[in-house]
Length: 402
Image 1 (tube, rainbow, N blue to C red):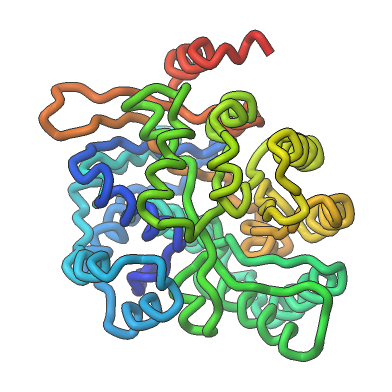
Image 2 (tube, rainbow, N blue to C red; image 1 turned 120 degrees about the vertical axis):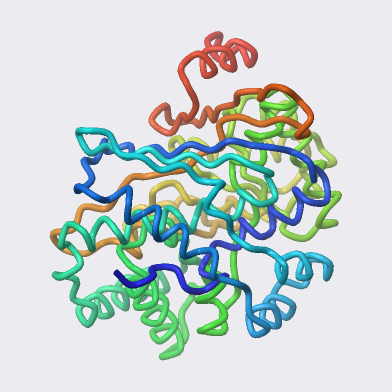
């Protein structure tokens, strides 16, 4: 079977920006990750073996001078030393354990130095998603010509509604070609006329390079989860904001706040951080209620929310994004990151609902034990971590008192 991932930057920007922050602030930290399939999918026989082979093939994927030159031009906030690290970086399949039980359920775990394993998540998820359709025959029915037209229509509706949006679809795409088709269609349509909205780019660094777009992204829940495990969830947001500000000095100033819910974040979101960060990202809960909470918080700090960015990325499609745009207009500067709906919306294909989450961390390799961690989003369906850890963190954060 062909190699699925062949480009080093066929990955989301936030993995690189977080990797840089990890090396600068937590260079000896060790972590564990675990794969979760929320649909409880039964994978075909031999899937685990082929996945192991695809992960082994990542060892021959290295960054090119063309990719480095593009990132230097478009990602000026990344320090020059980081590209020396990327030049010497090599994937190692020994960081990954893959198995499949008798019923066909898939198990994937990573373990190792945080600065190394952090660059596995998106690539492995993209491999799993595309490989599933290849091995089940779903890829044979993918009509990319029609998908280009469908994607142009999505672009038309978003742009005419005034939406500022980007593609976030790498992790659960139907295929590399599907994401390529979407991004080309959306760029082509935008260049055909003038619209109140704007297609600003993609989270995928390789496709941003291919189509000369802006690579979009900042951080993921992973950063706050790791700090929550090492230091406790009560101040994890505060530590993450401090780490991010120390690394990027005001650039990449959109904070993902929902790792442990709105309540504890709001307590950590002081006036200095509210002024420092350009905005917040909504990734769980009711989008409208979350926006109202954000607006109320800014106003309580005497900050005009109309000058703050709010990025919505909570399982959106075109209809939901347009609805939020109408509601948010005049309240903030709304924008949208849309993933699966863009890159895996083929007729007859059920999109995968898969994630890989950081579940344990330790500050240095010399520690004899890991500290477990979890994610407690506004949607319980997006919780990650084992039940005992979830219970412990909920108690520490007094979430049951809400």
